[in-house]
Image (cartoon, rainbow, N blue to C red; front, side, top):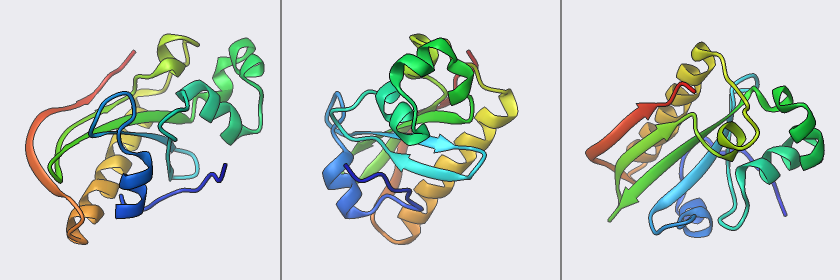
Length: 139
């Protein structure tokens, strides 16, 4: 499996990565230290993807969750080509492994996700719809 970072949500990325757990959902993992955004494969959990990205095992992450502190999840919901929701800061990393993030890093990740969305809109790949949610979860 190829791991790559993105600057925007291309049609190829949307086709291959959108539809995670439910239609129209794309999950991203944002490395706030490197300012890189990674789409998470549909059939992969955040914990497994984070381990792969860090070159660690899931067991190592379970033993030392702080290894993943710079990796922050952001989930985007899309309906009919319109962004209708974005939630940053919660996934199996936080809920299962108890990874915690500094509030400034959560805000930075949310901002990076919005930069990705905005560039996707500038390129006329997506539009901003009526947002149902635009939230950072500080756990």
